[in-house]
Image 1 (cartoon, helix red, strand yellow):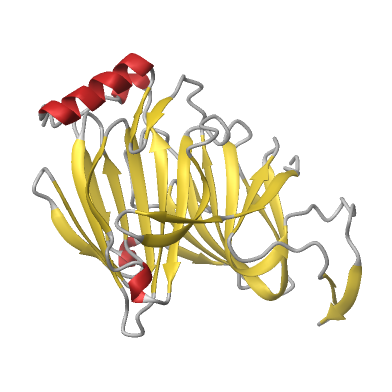
Image 2: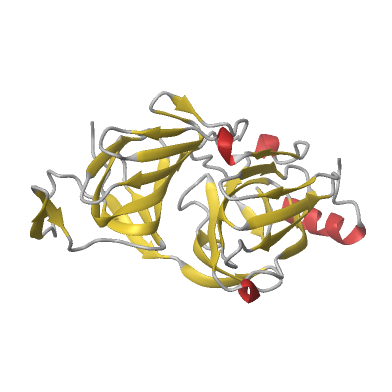
Length: 301
């Protein structure tokens, strides 16, 4: 196994989207090749309903797929195909915008007014940009969770991991999307595909993504239950971790444990022409999409 060293660790940036939703953006809109095939990742977490209740009213999508994962609260959604529903805590929605769809998402808090979820945008290859739109809602109860002997928990949302396969299927990028919890002071390694781009997004606790054989920058401060614990150079809440090449990611959890999303996908290596929620391959295709949006011919299905 070859350990993937950390390429960068960056905090998510506060951003306002939709009709006034306060969220944190881990990446998006600036470097479309950075984590190819992924284009954007948002963390919409808020304990104040005023910061999210106006939601994301009707807006277009073309040329991408979106994966929405809700942890707290709910999201009521609808689209131009007549689909509608409500995503609750633990649920996932995958939507293929394809040739074009109008969509809205209206979040609501839980009993305590809290809302928390993530949305990931995955690019579509040129051959599927104009495919028919499609989507599926997946209840949280259908997402397999694996609990290892050391207390590590992994929810397999997309892809295959430790003998389990996630219920979301048919995404062109064929990503692996895991929700991982590693208990306090535990060091854990996770196999990843050598030829895929990989990122981790920390949203609870803290830890360091460092191989045990790589002591660079590490200072052991104390021992807990007989284990050496590195409490220096730890990354925490709302941190994006990008990795270099290799086939294994190693994390050392801090004294409070760590929870993160571990996501990987095969790069498309295609040109990107991007305007908001419309992502094509050429500027002419992008201009055509905008013309169709303006003259009422955007929706093909």
